[in-house]
View: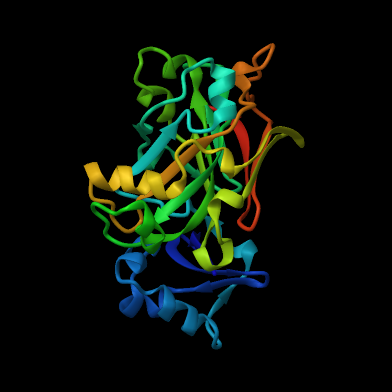
Length: 284
């Protein structure tokens, strides 16, 4: 099942994505939850699938504006330097523990929405990544049990303002400029994805492949990340773990390659889909 969050005639909702349109969950909101995050908290996805298989209200794709898959996660935990290929290009040592930083919910943008290059910098870089969405309250989860708390997966572009990222050893400023984190196009439930370490990841800039890898290059696989994160905090339904990027980012190319207004950037994950964004300059 593919799940989206969206706006329709100014109304926020969520639903099931199909080839023919979106099954709007709004008629079932009282029972299932008013948002996708709330539906995850109520464990309502099975009931939503049952209702979507009947004759529900269907919205045309052209009548909706997609939102980030989870517009308002309580936590977005990002993993830095988590692919061996990325470690190699950065010249860093292989980390002993996951290198984590936080992204704020209001720094996100949706599929087919703009990534904004800020006035403060021209060093806007792309990072294609796998996003893991938590489906159950989780604390002290062992890696062997981690898949039990996953609601699904999505594509993420962890857009980075590199000079601001490098002001100190902490990445937070460069990872939280407004509308730099692409999240979409939808959440795909685990039954359609299978083993996330077998997924292939491709990032394209204006149609040219920039990054390409199989997720078995991850230093800390998804189950280990959930075990680590759930040890120091309680993961809640709708929380997001962004698992890191592979080699090929613009900052380590010769010469460096920065995104600019008019560029189109795509992050594709096999068995999930393709997240597409266009780049604009921040208004003065």
